Length: 310
Image (cartoon, rainbow, N blue to C red; front, side):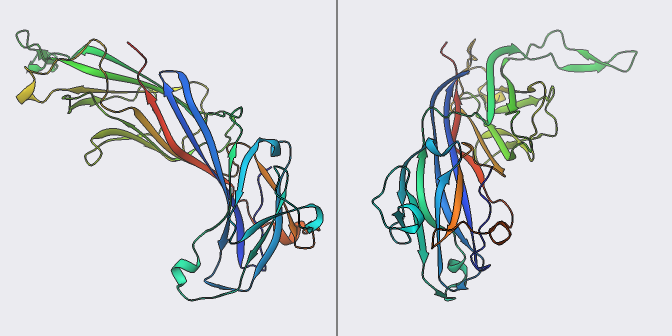
């Protein structure tokens, strides 16, 4: 269960945010980590003091490693609010002094309370990406219209080959609400900056476009829901006409940068880590007092796919 919002006199909320970092080489996961942060979200620039306790709770609590409290606002404590030395199973007390409302914009900025990392054995994959690059022959251009009103190919014109990206991707089926703000970017191989075409084989509701600022082709979804079969998309790149004779399309094209993805999700952390909340005396706060709506979320950090070795 996700940590609920804690209403501290209706002046603040508690939120847990995790970022997922993953690096793949083809289908193989090479590097992976999850880092998290517990935050206090002020609802106004002016508020009385906020004082409460929390600890990691539930079956996923043991996944939390290297919990580092923000010493300005957070200190480790023992059971029922008694001071104690920090440990991996410590509870934490939060004390934020009253604020006068000066600097309204800054006064509503999230306050980091504690940062942590997740055990490396925990490796959920929110978004699976399987790109495949190949060299293909572009179709001949049409130069006329036959008796049926269809274009007739120019038998004397053979366009240069293109670098073709075929992409399969799927959101983790355990994410009932899917992923939001999904952006997948593919950078063409060096010299192949002419977009020939993009073709969603089964891209769902993807928006496909060339991002001039990033120099990459991108697909965007919000949301991207789990599907029974992976979505399939494709895009072809060629050399500009001015340099077509000098640019060679390799049999296995190598993009100039790895495929990258950005995404977010609300309602849970990626690791499943939860919190138990209590008042400063150590008693559990009544549910009616602490729950407003769930503010747990996770998002992508560095999430990229490098080509498989040739």
